[in-house]
Amino acid sequence: MAFQFAGADTALVHIQHLISDKVNLADYQILAIPGGFSYGDDIAAGILLAVEMKHKLTNALNRFVEDGKLIIGICNGFQVLVRTGLLPGTLAMNTSAKFECRWVDLETQESLCVFTKGVKAQVYLPVAHAEGRFTAPANVLSELEANHQVVFRYAESRYPNNPNGSDSNIAGICDATGKIFGLMPHPERFLTKWNHPRWTRLVKTQDTCSEEGDGLVIFKNAVNYVKANLL
Ligand SMILES: NC(=O)CC[C@H](N)C(=O)O
Image 1 (cartoon, protein in one colour):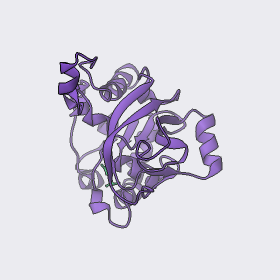
Image 2 (cartoon, helix red, strand yellow):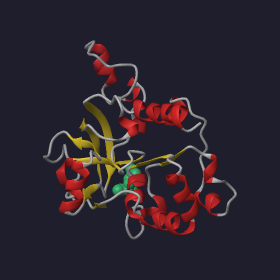
Image 3 (cartoon, protein in one colour):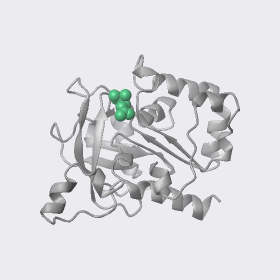
Image 4 (cartoon, helix red, strand yellow):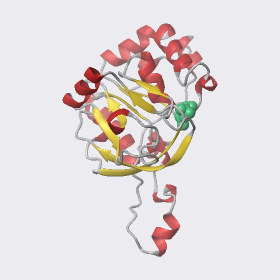
């Protein structure tokens, strides 16, 4: 629905339909791996879907990446992207050892990410996960910083504002091309002002609350990128 709001034609495709060639990944410009509980988080969140993609969809996925097409993984989708190796690091159990569900402030970093061009400095988005603690070896973390691949950070390092204890407060990263993006917060849950958890109070106090939710621009950027570069 977020991509529809952003003006794209969308299809909800089951992984088995891609594996069996019933649907061809090459017919699409953007691959969005959504949040949820793929395979019930068995073994670890995202791992089984990642294994399917890596081993049964190898050629189609490699070709998609080589063609410079866009991939976004949100929450469970981010977990899948790190476990396929398309993004570095890993997503471990939250330091609280429980599912964390709340709205958090994020700081947008200056990054290569094509999805976050022109996104305002502070955004407000919900998180809902148990395995969202981004962690990576020190050399990988420094590379991510140096190459401008850190896309979002939690605005505060303390729990519960950093909901999971992630290294360097990282909430989202991209690959070295800026075309593969993974994040734990859910931009698709803040598309209009009516998604804001306090929109009625904001209206009453005549506080500013723009018509567009903070998440929508991420999907619009992707659609605009495709229109300008891939079609
Ligand atoms: N909202 C989600 O995608 C949750 C991801 C995963 N099931 C977790 O709990 O970490």
